[in-house]
Length: 243
Image 1 (cartoon, rainbow, N blue to C red):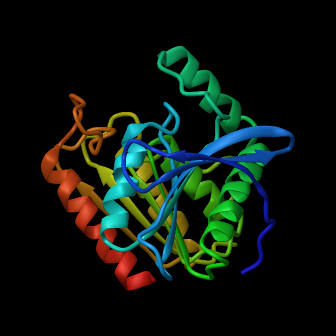
Image 2 (image 1 turned 45 degrees about the horizontal axis):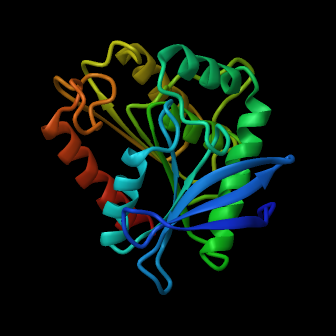
Image 3 (image 1 turned 90 degrees about the vertical axis):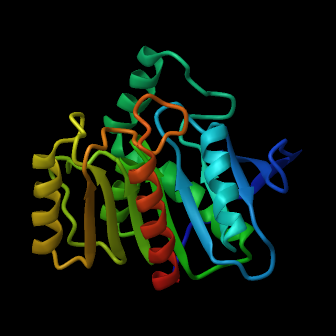
């Protein structure tokens, strides 16, 4: 696999969550802060993309869960170091800016991917996954032709921007979605399935009954334990099958 490597500028010690580290890296002169955790050795590498509130304790927790299963994780930052929005208006502004500038989104995703590969010592096996906004970003990475083994979306945006398609996807796609999601509809889900099939992209798409948008977010009114546990089990099985 071929990547543009971005050099890490600074490691910000250890987090309060265990053996992980916050990593500051630079993209086009701006600092971004991701999170890296690894069980050590030649652990398979995964790339995580955060939700619309930025890289928070939620992503750190998911990274720790994967590390316990033997996977290395780099949680990329698409907003900038220290930018962790708490108000809905700011979240919409930040995500809307990237939805409106797909080239910038791809640049940031590829920079995070390069950082992940560098941290892993040059791994040639990587699966990318993301939540909500992060799920949409992972599908953007897939459409860009990134040479990864797999792309996984948890309750992510599923629409395809005008002028894009899935003809250049190099890995398989796994979509984990809530049937009760009114933000990303089952019509969107069906349309994506048709696009993936038409492009001959290996894919699996699962919906969970009664699960709304953001059904995996712990402590949220939208959290659905059954759908969360089932989707996590399928995700980790997919990692074993793919890597």
